[in-house]
Length: 320
Image (cartoon, rainbow, N blue to C red):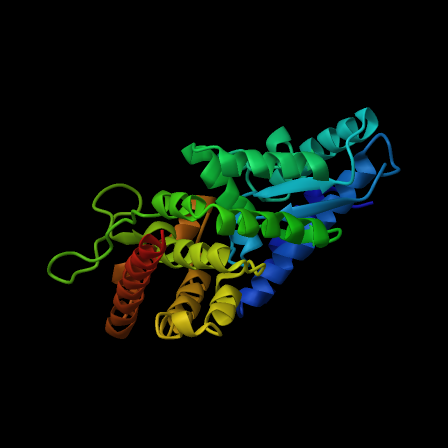
């Protein structure tokens, strides 16, 4: 039987063979995490799974946008709540989080993990929780809904995730204020281009001279496209796949004209960040290492993300 340690050895030895493109890398991450799930199930004192369940990943994993090192973002939906089932999946969720950490996926600092009871529930309890998040007006509830909307099934049936996302879409159609709350949560983005047209880089510390791709490049695209996806009720999770579906809607065709190419190029830049020792390293791109053409391309990506973000915010505001 494999162990979490042996999975990490296998992962570290083979990941370099999957860096040709983003799809290959994320498919490899999926394989590693599924191996962790199998070992976690084997490690359970009760070997027989008491009922069917779905294990999903979210965040960059859910969107198929992981880099070389990725942290954990995952949850469990099981068929029904009984004392036996609740205990089994509580323990399985804790075992999964421990196993992923050993295998090289650091614990999520925001506790978006199956070891957190918030992210490990029966289907009916998930429905109640989603409903509560939609009715609640807190910043945290909207954040949780956004995270859930990026959920992608790694193991089990997809129907429950699709139904819960449909619930969110239906609710926001009947209660337009919800979309406004989603918008308010992602309204502000960090400025990436200075008044003289220069790329704004980190001025101090370990990442001096670099830009944080996550905050100044990825998030304007990811947040904008997710917002439109919630508005239109799309079930796709990958930003590029969401763009493809949204481009079929006449209203967004012009808006997204350059976004697909920009985001594809951005994903390729993420793949160049190979000399990394920890999770945070995967976000920082040193501008000095770029050629003149690459700097021009990055500047275009950053400007395009800000332009898309502002246009989507205005569009949603007008529809409130």
